[in-house]
Image (cartoon, rainbow, N blue to C red; front, side, top):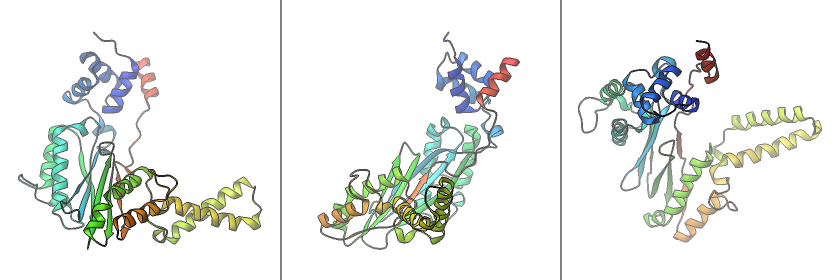
Length: 309
């Protein structure tokens, strides 16, 4: 029989939120095999995610799909409670169907109310059935579409198996220019995933955001006390301008060619293709962003309590 250590117990607890004694017993039963131990926890109904986290689903995947003509694409986030369940085949098949429903949906539609593609009932009916089968809450959290009015292309990029997804559109003077610029567009989508720029270009940055940053920089300078009061306004203005460049995709140094900005690479790609190319506002979803998870007892406290018992 394999020896079970506390590091294994902690990992299993993090993955299932089951109690420490239950995790230790499951690992012992599974002879130290982590995935089998997770199955033991789930089969015995010991996973406490729903009870301890209020059925909060923050794991799962972000999925994308681009139409065959590359004129439109959709991005969807479907959440589930644990990373183990996020690899379940039934769950992943459900995600595919949700994406399929999004493709045929009107902008802003509630996907849960739509007919389930290739099946019976609505998306919600099938979601509820899958929750009952897997024993974990599932939420179709959000979706969005990027669509072109004329020539160009929509590209997508999914990072780390669905942790981050990006949809990026570009308007072009012709289908030929769009096709020849494919490599640049894919690298730009990767840039959005890696650097998470809030804006496409400087003109998109709201004045309120600039003012908020200016207040932050002013407070920092006041705290440091190194810059004379009469010079602070000029320093703050410079800092805000630098922040705007860092926050805008087109002004960021490329992760592929750091000595050039994304906009410089866009211009080069357009010139090489013999046409014009304009990037459009993008969509970036990061799995679970903005979801507040309830905080339960920390691991050390639970170990101490178990030792006392």
